[in-house]
Image (cartoon, rainbow, N blue to C red; front, side, top):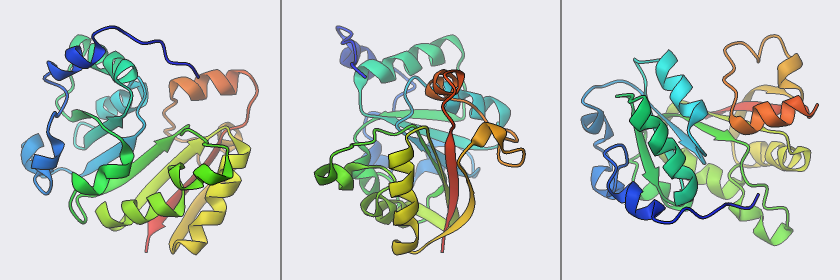
Amino acid sequence: MRLRNVTGSREMIAESEYVVHEPELIKGKWQEEFGNENPIRLEIGMGKGRFLMELARRNPQINYIGIEKYSTVLLRAVQKMEQDPLPNIRLIRMDAEYITDIFSEGEIDRIYLNFSDPWPKDRHAARRLPSRQFLARYDQILKKDGMIEFKTDNTELFVFAEEEIEDSGWKLLQITHDLHADEEMRKDNVMTEYEERFSSMGNPIHKYIIQKI
């Protein structure tokens, strides 16, 4: 997908009250940032924010953090927050590679990975968000029994992700290769922009839920 550059997007994000600009200073103190002791859930690669904002509306008793590395994309989420502010959301512009720099051990309750970049070349496997390298990072910041939910329409990426689970020491809780046809796993499903687009084209959506052991 080619991203259309928006002139001044970084400057607009830098001025936004909904974006945490120095998240490394809040490491270990995210509940203080939200002003409560509610569980904290993290979406990595949040895109324009549709999924995260819908979860936040449905679950005001849960705090949500969205990470997005592209300023042009994050700006869309910022604009949505300006129109419909949600007190239980914080946004961060950063690369997911550095999540252990901004979250302490056990600080996150759950992680969502939605339609992540497949990085199709073998030499880029370590950059894939469900890779064993990233699973090791998630292991550091998730609480005991914390979970990861991963959705994609990319079959090759999902097969790769499945293979990484056991080798990385995670427990597979649920899995489907056609989410919208799975009565149990589609309950309370919140669709992303990509999910709506791909499913309308007839593409089956793969999903797994894994748990930290």
